[in-house]
Amino acid sequence: MQEGDSVFGQMILIGTGGSEGADFAGAQEIIYNPKGFNIHAVKNVYDKGAQGKQESIFFFGAYLNRKGCYNEDGISDVTKAVLEICYNRYILPISEDEMKPNIMKFAVGDTVEMKKNHPCGSASFIVLRSGMDFKLRCEKCGHEVEVPRSKAEKNIKQIIREGADV
Image (cartoon, rainbow, N blue to C red; front, side, top):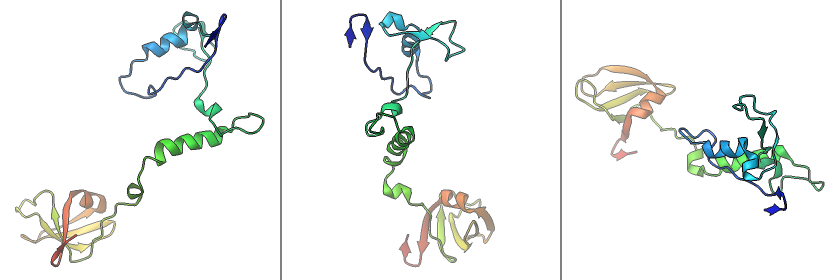
């Protein structure tokens, strides 16, 4: 909003932080040439690598004036605001199912079908030990292997128990 020689308002730059290959030319033009956009300029003491620009804009994060995150005197509760923003950005989008640990349940004696075949041609292994490491025996040739749980879980296609798939 412009009133006489002064401009008031809130400029919002969204989606630029950390975007690989993002073009910041428009934002840089506003930041380093505020008078060209009729924005109040301040002495550039914030950015040492300002490409020789003596003036800049003053900006602050939205967390400084987030609705419901300031007291009766109008003082921002920055900690509450940042926690709300982080919660909304990182926690809310995660479903309850995604928050549950994805741990496969194995029992000694289970047969597991692997995504890739053993060199002998079989993809079926019997679980001899489960825990942080697995000990598996190839059903065809009897070769035994020990693998970390993370690698085993990544390579298992399905667990086969007596008469049922899990």
